[in-house]
Image (cartoon, rainbow, N blue to C red; front, top):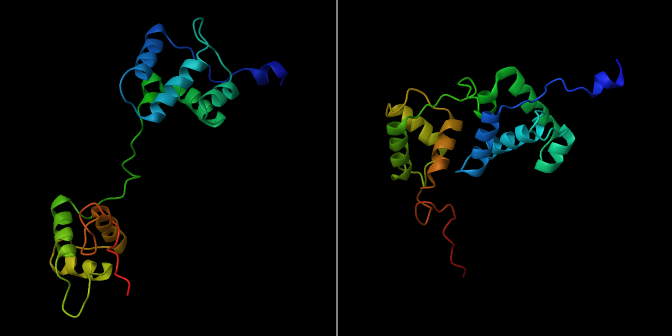
Amino acid sequence: MTAKQIAEKRYVVKLSDEERERLNTLIRAGKHPARQLTKARILLKADASETGEGWRDCEIAAALDTSVDTVARTRRQLVEEGFDAVLVRKHSPASARPRIFDGVAEAKLIALACSKPPKGRKRWTLQLLEEQVVELKIVDRAKRQHDRADAKKTFSGRICRSNGSSHRMPTPRS
């Protein structure tokens, strides 16, 4: 391999006038996710067409405060998957954890957690909640991690000052 072959870009970005205008509009107008804006800026800087800037990956990374790998991945994705694939975030259903609690069951869990604890208990524990939601047939099964995540999201409980507050009530000093 010669030095010229090594220096050649494997994934060359050449945008049409329409694509360039679409990216400029995306950057200028409205609110968009930061990742999408960064990718749009990368494509504009990497554009090697006659009207493009044609920057190198390291220059783009330095200017946009991102990594060279991100720039290279964006170039590769444009060439391999197309213009729209770069700007749309992929969703993988396999990556999402299936939820045990739907909206109704979650509301019942919250009501249970805010209710009076069982006799002989000062407060609800996660294990007690887990056992109770199965016993009351709110859900078929419950794992502690799911209870913790759903109960934690609500920020409501007997020790909270008001909904949205996660600080405990101060105890008076003697």
